[in-house]
Length: 82
Image 1 (cartoon, helix red, strand yellow):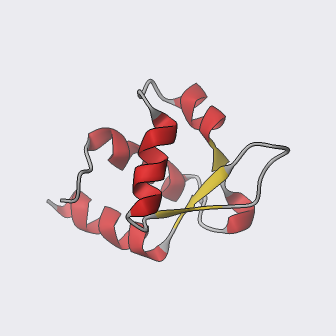
Image 2: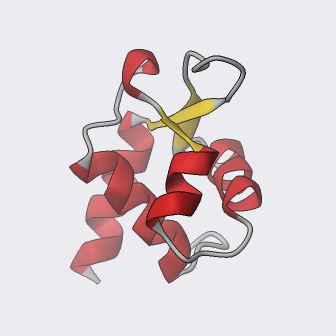
Image 3: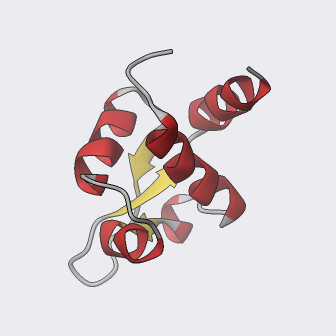
């Protein structure tokens, strides 16, 4: 696996379960922080973005949103099968 741990998988799970899979349906860092007790959510999302598993969506007010990509869905399915 590519520098991803279980907390990163939790973020991907939330994006899949919440149907955050388009630019219009992204989730903000603040929303992630409210839902999970995970350290460095923004850093983790940027790492997932650099790997191509999430992308930035349309902003909500001034907040950046993130959504899962097809590559992210594929990676998630492979990861949960292990």
